[in-house]
Amino acid sequence: MSVAAAAGRQAWRQLARNSGTSAAIRRTISSLPKPSSSSQFRPASVPAFNTASKAVPRFAQSQYRSYSSGGSSGDGTQVKFWPFVLVLAAGSGGWVLLLNRQKNMPPNPKQTASSSKPTPAFSPSEVTVLFVLGGPGAGKGTQCANLVKDFKFHHLSAGDLLRAEQDRPGSQYGQLIKDCIKNGAIVPMEVTVALLENAMADAIAKSGSPKARFLIDGFPRKMDQAFQFEKVVCPAKLVLFFDCPEEVMERRLLERGKTSGRADDNAESIRKRFRTFIETSMPVVEYYDKEGKVIKIDATPGPKEVYEDVKRKLVGKLGEDF
Ligand SMILES: Nc1ncnc2c1ncn2[C@@H]1O[C@H](COP(=O)(O)OP(=O)(O)OP(=O)(O)O)[C@@H](O)[C@H]1O
Ligand SMILES: O=c1ccn([C@@H]2O[C@H](COP(=O)(O)O)[C@@H](O)[C@H]2O)c(=O)[nH]1
Image 1 (tube, rainbow, N blue to C red):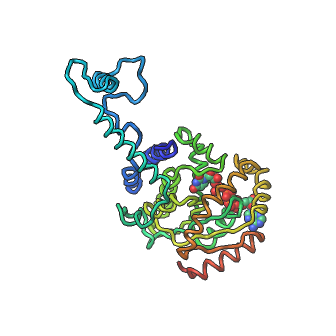
Image 2: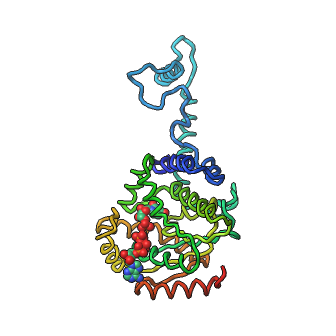
Image 3: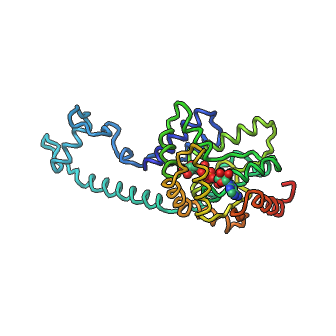
């Protein structure tokens, strides 16, 4: 299991524990991949780490001796161990190859939809989710603020939730999140999906009504997040995509960086964020575009003009009363 995957799995458990585990998160914890490292093939009595200087448990001692002595048990009985070793090694190798192959393959939506098929935590008949995507500095947050006023959305920024978790005293994932943000990398999806689900549950509980509209800003930035969120939390109705040239976004971010205090509003982090956006997040936009769910907005003009376009296109697609 990769370090990021392990961190994600841990993160999920921790976040669920900290903020009242929902049924959906609990289900996902149990459906996360089980450890696939060598520990799976290690007899329980064999220590995980090199214990050369320490006493090795009896069972392990006898195994090590057998392997190195070509099958003699040492008491005169001729037991051939090498065929077992070969079978075990071949089996383990095949398993590792299979896991690595799966890791490198994009998630298969059909498989995801048909296999364990957990029910999402929120029903799309009660909860409307709009994903808000666009490059860093395209103006997503600015336009979300406008939509909140006119359409009574709850605005949840994935970046803001991650920054809050990073700064939460005692958070086990503070450093991981900090490093990802500085480098424009994507935090393991379990962390972000759990934070979003918890925030949605909080907002719904506070409003006292199961009906709610959410703008999920800056998410999903990666295909795995998209599939996981829709499977476990709530299917999305639409994606608002703010399209903006890099030079315009860079100018805005450098300007914002003069006062934002954000660790990633600097030239080096911005370059990395742009690369992640092109390589990892644009495929998400393309995926939803093929599904006919994307409303594309030119984010180059001033904020007012952009908002007029957002409103016109959103109402055009969903009507006033969606
Ligand atoms: N249409 C616009 N024209 C000019 N400046 C804008 C426009 N929209 C937003 N800005 C400014 O650009 C900066 C980035 O905007 P905003 O924070 O809304 O972008 P974002 O897409 O949410 O960024 P990030 O992904 O980094 O959080 C802000 O300083 C904002 O005031
Ligand atoms: O789903 C997400 C969203 C964000 N991140 C990390 O946070 C920063 C900042 O995000 P903003 O939306 O610009 O506030 C982003 O560059 C990622 O490092 C994430 O990992 N996953």
